[in-house]
Image 1 (cartoon, rainbow, N blue to C red):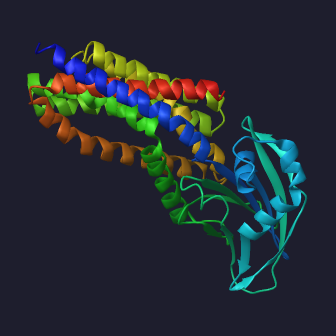
Image 2: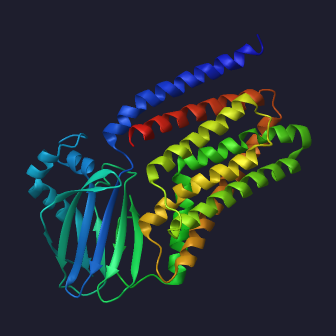
Image 3: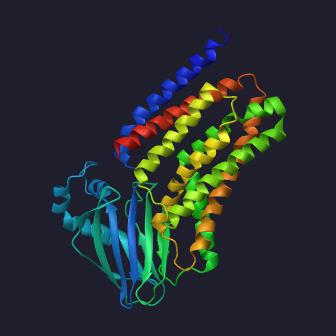
Amino acid sequence: MRSRTPWRVTALLGAVAIAAAIVGAPANARAHLGSRKYLRAEVTDAGVVVEAEVEAVDASMELGLGPEVDEAALRARAPQLARWLREGLRVRAGDAPCEAEAEAPELVTRDALRFVRVVLSYRCAGEGARVLRDETVFPDDPQHEAIVQVAWAAESERDAQILRRGRQEVELGAPAGAATLTGRFLWEGMLHFATGYDHVLFLLSLVLAAGFVTRKKGLRPTLKDVAWLVTAFTLGHSVTLIAAALGVVVLPSQPVEIAIAASIVIVATLNVWRPEQRGPMPWLALGFGLIHGFGFSSVLAELGLPRDQTVLALVAFNVGIELAQLAFVAVVLGPIAWAARQRGYRHLVRGGSVLIGLLAIFWVVERIAGA
């Protein structure tokens, strides 16, 4: 009886996780959270030209057409689409708003998704710095991101930033200096790991059973075990992150995302099957780290590495990932070491791994369906 009860609890928790996934999937589809917009702003003597690309599903929902994209209906609403973007994407020079004109929208394909593209021309009569502010999509999607590429007609320089809810404007000034660039890419690296829940769950799966080392050998060998895991994962993803960022090896994003989710399933399964077996974990961390590196590189692909400061930006982004990674391990290691001294630790590892594995399986299925 003693051995069956924890598994009954695990089975119940697994059923709850599956039910939550089934119930949550339609809700997420309706809300379409986490969408992305691309803005390319070119600064000219007269003003600013912005090429905006918005996911077609966001445009459809804004016009009240629902999440299913009807391209004919979107084309019929072209004037409303142009007005929505013209009113939501604002440019000002100092305190004076710039006058905007929008060209006819067109439907384009980007990353296997349909987007609405609109070119907006702003004439700025005011003095002072020109600032682009984005008020579109953010009110309905708190996870929305706008990738802003800034170009200067008179220079070969390029700059890029990501707008998120609460930080929805960018100054179209001179190219960023080394200190600003370092801080920006450092922050993006930290944020990309912290909000990349699949990366976080993979690392959690790797260290979840480290408490068995604490039970057998104590805390210091546990720290060594986790240090090997983190080092192997870092080495793996750093290699492919750099290779992908420099264009040496570039893989399609969809298979990479599927493989990342599958890597979580594999490690979680090993934790359920043989939770005390730590030998393969560093090798899994290294091997699957190579795959996760391609996932980390997606943000760099969107931002674009600055031409004259490529190494600086790449190093800052990678260091940001490592800082967030180390902070996460530092937070979870204490509770894991404490739990390892409790009688139910084995069931905690197995039950937690079942939940993690179920969620990862859901991601695999969802990503295959979206391929």
